[in-house]
Length: 225
Image 1 (cartoon, rainbow, N blue to C red):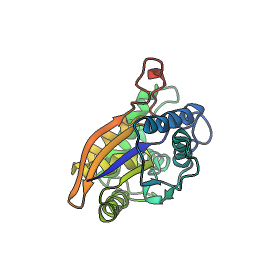
Image 2 (image 1 turned 45 degrees about the vertical axis):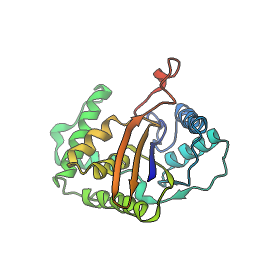
Image 3 (image 1 turned 90 degrees about the horizontal axis):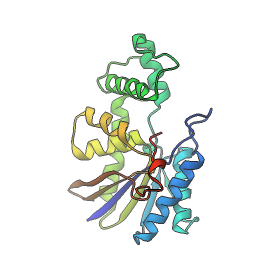
């Protein structure tokens, strides 16, 4: 059996003008994850990332934690996140009653994203979006199929984003679209999900684990953005 390790990027710069870069905490979370892999004696045959800056920076932090900063990375846009800014903007154009006041708590913004994702999945957004739900699903299905066709007993590390990982896991679990939404909204930064797989399919072993942060002195550093 081969093994697939899915890692969400470290904390991004949520309060800056450019979300697509790690915060100082995100860099640290990534290095700690690499150190955890080293402590476990994990050696990966392939490391694959999306093409976003936060994916690359997370990979660099993990590799620094390995002590192998020059290890080769494979990149593909198939593991990129969906464009959630465009998705929410289009959702609010078509459904303006869901618009939030500027001073609402962060938890309310989760509800807005949930509504936008559910409408997207149901084909209820009709404006100009970079990709449809089916196209997003298709590129993750393509990546999973490629892994199955190329790996026999390899350990594969994929570093991506919460939505892409949630879609991949929803396909692995053969679940309805609502499962992707639920998984996406709870995925932690620098979290680890693990699957076994062969040519016959995938089996989820663990989801959303943060063993490198699950200590008394680090628990307050667990984040979701």
